[in-house]
Length: 357
Image 1 (cartoon, rainbow, N blue to C red):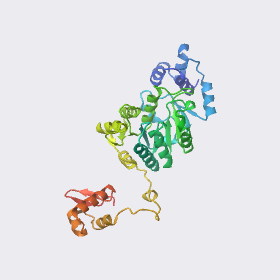
Image 2: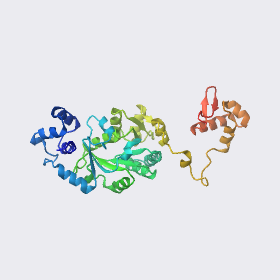
Image 3: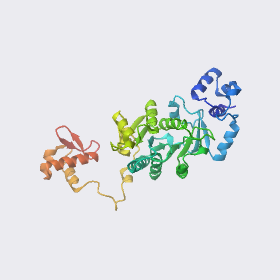
Image 4: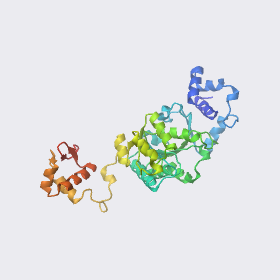
């Protein structure tokens, strides 16, 4: 038995994970030797049947699934941050997207339209910037996030809470096929035949968190799998972000609690990219609409303000004098230009162009 086959065998065995295997490897010298030394009564699957690695590999071939073990070079390094990392990953599609920037978007299965819209738009914006969106392929926020990433032309990866051949939920099978066709993947750590249950989803949530640089929560009740994923992310040293919602909405309670406890509040994909220092933004011309349908970047009044700003800066009072606009109007226009990264504020109620301009 090879080391790879031994990892598949241990993954099929009941209640033997990477922590227990590491101890056995330390004692026996290798995973293959550990398997050979394992008592026969422990070489049984979760259902109590005999473990058959050859059958598992044959099923993988039939379903077009790659089994990646923890000793294979393709195994995502981030997963080994987990104390008990998966011994195997069952992959339908490609994991290439995991080599770049990654962000998980998670949330309730019963979102409001506000949550659905923002999950879609945030995922789309991340995908347009080359960030792989990871989620759990559940209905609700997860599905909206995967769809947004596809709309943005990016790869997205779904982590199942069941085996790939026991795909759940059935409503998202078509979405999963689209993800695979678009250079993404559907993955699971569970062997063929394992249906989802109350124990599989928390395991799935930790994988979602581990694969990501940051986890973004969009609508989550106070008792939800979303908050479990966020706790996993914090334990793994990942950044946690949350979209604020209505203070009287049950679906927003978890996100508001996260923000109160120190999670980064985000409004859009730009906030996430800025906080993570994502550098591979497309050139501005690629993000802008075609000239014939593009809206002006600056209003007439904003253009008047910018025309009067010298390189060394100017006070808002002086701007009001030079432009003839009311001081309150100048202040509001300058704030808007600051939000567009067109101006920066200086001490003494002064403004100037950003240093890069």
